[in-house]
Image (tube, rainbow, N blue to C red; front, top):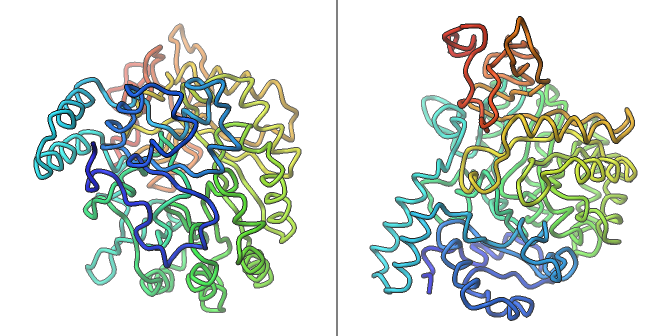
Length: 447
């Protein structure tokens, strides 16, 4: 059996969370999930092996309302939330399975798992090395400032989710290793940093999921930003998966009304409030309570924008994306991004070649009207910035990817096009080579 040290606790700080009206399961509690009793002991063991390395957490709403258990294991929401053996490379899986079977001593098991996690690129795209700012020479570990206009804030009370996505690029936040975690215990440093950086117009509250917090705690972070001294902050963004994994947060939770009132207060202050909803499949939008939650948020004046990655086993076909975008438009949600799966965690299980990603994106776009063609992508959130695949074409007899920066560490790179040699197998920016005989991409020279 996996030990407590290898699987995140059910709830590290229960005081920070709304009253729990649903059951939440971790890998230690797989046997309590009624639907899993129809799966073999071997499959349940495989889940526990994977969950010893990557975080696993799922709630009753996802289990009962979103997963089609008749379609398991191919059901997309099951793949989205439940560990699969292939999510670990064979060498990692075999090592952990053997350790668990032989009941390896806890200290040795912990060390083995730590070494495996270190090989899985826990913080991609320079998140720890390049994105964390300093004030008076001191690192502010709960902030990231990669792009000039936007600061990300990681409140400590929001560094967990109602359920965990198996592909999550922030999986390292949830494995109980403080060396890997990005979190701020209070908002004073955020306010001080923003006062010194008037170029910042957007603050993104992220995690984890800020919607796991009680409204009074979220309000304590956000209300100070509504004052005149922060007039340069034009937009507050909230990144969340709660509309999928716990829409009750906006409808039936004890402080749901207070949460919506907070949204109204932000808008009344003159700020733009953007709810950055993470969606991976159209089924997440089909329950009555999910639709009600969307309507309630929109009624406050908040704009809901949707984003999510293209994932093998979950949504790697044009029809699912077209249906997702059209459903979102029907509900008043603005499709915002189609991302490429990041180069971290179980990326080998989910990644789709860039050429295939472009084909899926293009064929999905062809199925929706212009009002639904607002999703940018396929986009890679890479070290130098957000790079979008704009197409595949031929120039002077050479087949190439046409790319551009949507965002960049250097703002002068924004909207700048460039070309890469065509590849059938490349899945990330660093797999690409410059076209037309160039030795480097322009951003490699300028970094």
